Amino acid sequence: MVKMLFILGIIVLCGSFWEFWSAYKSIRTVRHNGTQGTSAFIVMGIWSGFMFGLILFGLSFALMFPKVAGF
Image (cartoon, rainbow, N blue to C red; front, side):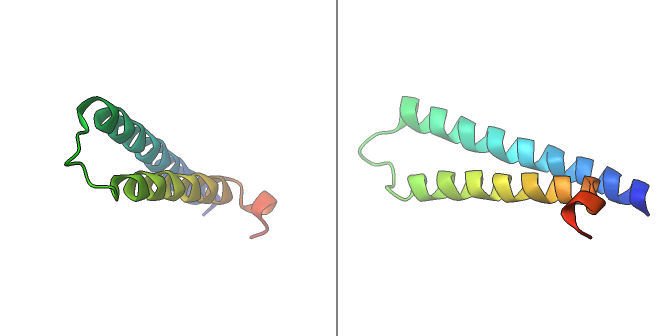
């Protein structure tokens, strides 16, 4: 069971890194290709991407180290 949680934690950690990278790429794209027609809500979308990545990052460590997390 512990090995399965550790493997699941690594998968979630990879997902969090992908989310951070995706949000970073979105920032770069908006900076280089953004115009007056770019929606103002893009900032909210990028922020929520970073927050979701942060949540996944914390969840991954809670899954990999359940005794430290208090499970």
